[in-house]
Length: 380
Image 1 (cartoon, rainbow, N blue to C red):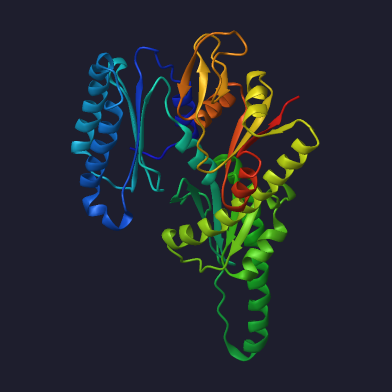
Image 2 (image 1 turned 180 degrees about the vertical axis):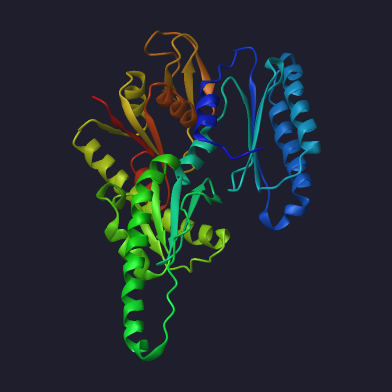
């Protein structure tokens, strides 16, 4: 099993679930410090999750559910965990089975529903963007890609720099040393210019959302100065690291920068949302107005607080999503069905309409919770 890609998420989102054939969605996570017992932990968690679902099903549904559960249990009995999290989607009646390991922690949960439960994956994708780390000094450069908590060194990204070795002897030793110093400085500048030029190409190739410059301070400062303007705007920060640093050392420091930048951007986003909503300038705050905008297809970007839990309803006829408490659909008058995770349904609906979603954390989430925990920027 490889890393989860954006293409994976697009295919999962496009998967059409048949009304009479629900999908079992599972997120299983173990403690990193107990990876030796990971499979046993996952099997224990899985049994608890499956038992809780089956206990709420009607007898006519249990056979189909047990078929999905049995296929997942068979897979897990032979699975050797290499990462702390595992994501599985299964619909045995349609011969649909998808599994990936993740290096980031996720909450243990399960859903058996008429949609693939993607909310945790979408939130992880938002939290852990794809970014590049350029580790360089005056003669060598290395490139890493980081995505969903995993790091990979792109060994073919930079060709080895050609270093000119100069030997000196005789009475010109002092003057030769000065020439060597000047040549060394010239070579360092040439090297960093080459790196800056290559980065323009590599950023497109590897689709980085952001860049981090790592290495000795002199090298990262000079490299930043040499970058094209469009790349400077993507630089999330700098790290003081030796060029020989291991990938795990690079990952640990890079994630600190990425998380700090993400939290800062979320605070700004929520401030802009609440200001625009207060002015009624193509923005909403709170559950009811946001649901109304969703029904009208006006949401450009949905913003919601981390761990926001909302129950609601869906119309059995026109599929409108509604807040909890409605007795009949206000749009067509038909019956409603209870929706346990209204946020997940809203996220899925926004994506279907070509919109974007953003989950916010920390201070940004606290500020948004005061305004109902959810809001949206509108197209019109």
